[in-house]
Length: 224
Image (cartoon, rainbow, N blue to C red; front, top):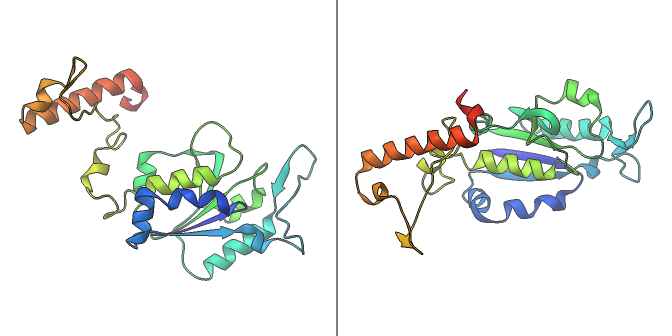
């Protein structure tokens, strides 16, 4: 998978892909992350990328020309399956969306900033708009990193045990069941006997029951 991330703050995206699972995915050649500095496409000698909003009001708006030129340049090099804009008023990111995106080959992720982007970009360039929650951040860089992490970890070969992703929360519209590890008893607190039984069938049944109960308690909306 190849992902181009367009941003006015490329430094914010250095750390998320330099460690752990994302680093290994890149080293294995399973994912390529290309961070594009939008200011390279800025207007005039000042590399301007934002301007005042027509009609007045507080805050600046990301201009159409730098972003359009950037996307056009990227599209001249490869075909993109999706051009995604990270924005608080997009559709909320879900595991199902991540599952679908993980099957794609080339993606552009545009990080919003200031008061957002010129609406004409959303009408003529953006193919999908995604939010990571009902709140506002200073920019789209952190949401872009969240999206990429959630998607890349699903690519076959990224995780050492590919079945691990299949048992994550939300994959079957249930939260994950509780998990335990050694020691079997600590400070008088014991691991459920069923997990020590060695009966794989009974363990899986218990985990499924626990997942349903936890979902009922914490996220009943998922069961609807």
